[in-house]
Length: 422
Image (cartoon, rainbow, N blue to C red; front, top):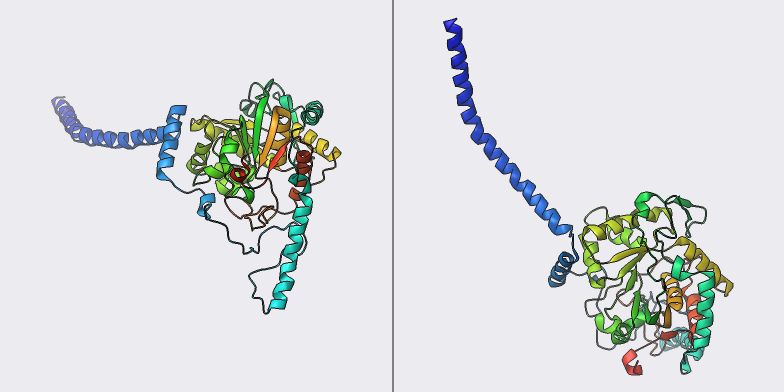
């Protein structure tokens, strides 16, 4: 009995000594684990901002680092006069304008033959722009007539943007891009919708719709654009890196094509910081996503919504209503327009015609030669990258816009704003 007690006492002593050895090691391990856990929390907090003030700080840091956007990797706008040699890739408004000017010309006779297509292009541009050469005067009655038609047939005020009022949980949406596909709205989608229509009972005195055509390069139109009460921009264009003078900085609404999220930001599956750095230049504007045009775009656009929300950005994501886009397509086809699909610029111009008393268009010129100087133009004011051909009928859309300009319904700006005193 006494021997068992001694054995128990010895066991307890060994256990006590072992605990003395293990405790310091365990404590050091705990301290070691706490540090990375605390670091990860701090890192997450710095990335996913929970207030607009913190997001402003984030954007301030972005502006100080001056990291170039994808668009800024191309040559920025220069203030000196443009060169007159013609690029092979430049889009031409007439046949025979796709000649490769980089090829060596063997003699003067050949050179004369090669120059004729360009003369033809100039003639066709001059002929096409005869209505534009006349002094522009706003025709309020014609604008109000078109606005009334749009209000009756497409109802942009109530229907252009999906809201919790016009689209309930369980609603079946027919995607406008693929007519055969129908999508059911679920609660996770419904929660991202605006509660009220953003444009209900609102009329803006002046709106500027800004396209991205190369004609804006060296245009000095920035002040004119920023003077509008409501400024609409297309497809996340760059505004910094000396573009401000030519395109302005004010933004109230900017569209974002899902293909941009897919191609430039890896569908927001990886790091989302680059995407949010891009949005800093648009301030607290609305970002318009055509989430329900194609079923495959819904997940990407929802991911964009949650990214903006997680970073605490003041931007407001909104979605085009596919029913509105279908009605708008039907309306313009009834006016004689024909193409596979309306462009973002045409859709936003249509919305502006309904919402605004006066509508001014900048950066809407689909050809590769300047309409006044006949110098070469890049496809966009920030790069020369072209989209898929055959999807949008840009020259046909321009003719429609030119007709609306000649009727005094909207005003197209082609060329240097300062030289015109605009």
